[in-house]
Image 1: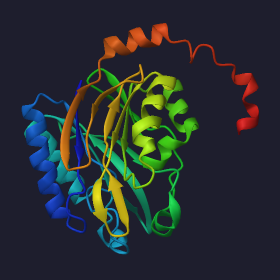
Image 2: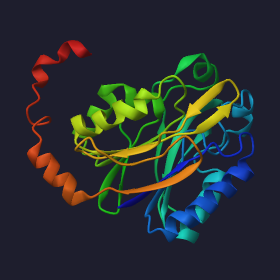
Image 3: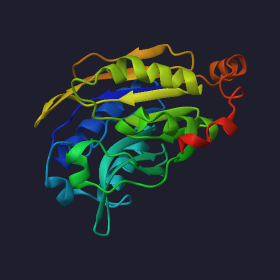
Image 4: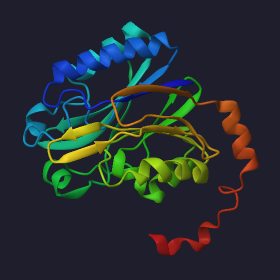
Length: 262
């Protein structure tokens, strides 16, 4: 499945402008043959927007979700994106996957919040594995800091995730996560991992870009630089099956030894 990674911080504070950027990127992605476009963490509103997070937060089935469903249908591809989700008085840092026919396939709430900024503005989710079927692949969702906990990615591996989408807001000086950790996560769990970052200065944060789609062999299929960029790579189910057959990690596990981890 041809997958497009939109590395962009959009226009922090302007949902309308970010929807426009997403629409334009979806058009380019579809023209390049992509079946899926993934945008970064909190792409809908911007990340470093302080108390505007609460004001701009929307339900999972809100106005912006409907607008993104229209974008997906118009361009004929699935779209995954990060946004602040409101559920009553509670706000989550969420990511949603919408299919090419406009169906809301999956909604994930970030389970591991990073730093005081996130803990001040969000409530952590409590569902570790959220998945959907898309074009013959089992697609899973995590958000940024979540992927840095090996337990999260292993849970997806054991649940059969083929392609893990990770909208992120990775900042300086933690670029080693994009450069080194993501390919390792893909290899040790035998899956594709698409890590899609913001880029540039935003408030007090400097986002480092370096978005990457890594394969189950630990090799990046594409990697962005440090500017706004749309990059592409394929998640190949045949290669994934062959890699899983050859790699013994999951079948050689000894869960009975791991009880102390929890």
